[in-house]
Length: 294
View (cartoon, rainbow, N blue to C red):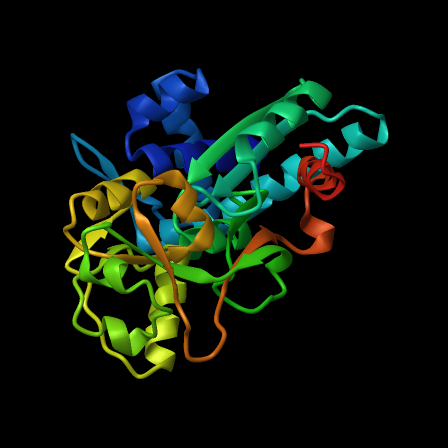
């Protein structure tokens, strides 16, 4: 089995189209098709169901995809490790992050990394913490800045970076703003909530706070970006429970302290693979973060 066969297979699986994959790989479509057929012959199983418009993975193809990605990530890490020993970082840094992550100036950190390692290609992806954890564990991301969603495993470890309490944001004309009191989940039981999708870290923390207090809440207004959430609150369409640093993003809104049931707070972490599988680029980025160079 040749590495190029696996590279071709992963490209077709991701694009779900031979022509697009061939264009991305800069190979001919006939050569790509021949590569996939050779892989199928070796594995003695069809990997794709082909139609005139798209291709989809067979059961055997789905089983191979995760392993192929893992193998290619390990090969890439091997190349990068050798380059690092020689004093030069090359290759790719694939980073994931939630929006507006606390305690991590992502843009400034990446700018400092690029100045120090211009030969490394930087790739950035935003997603919810649950998805980011899966991507790091599967080897598709070198590291991610997120909220802790699970305990450490053999494939995934976490480094705590920052912690902060949750706060209630509301419109200054909202009845809660007039009281100005420390709030409990019970005080908010009948409110209309604006919140992120369940995969996001702040949503997971808020859900945990209310579940711990035994208070049921519904979220009729779900968003997938911070500014959309703030806009809805700014129009007095609902309130939100968010990490405290969000209050600085829209000064006109009222921020009220939340006294939760069990001391739950929003904890920012770096998600990394096992120490042996961590790429030199990821280690270099973490070094910048730890020294404050970013």
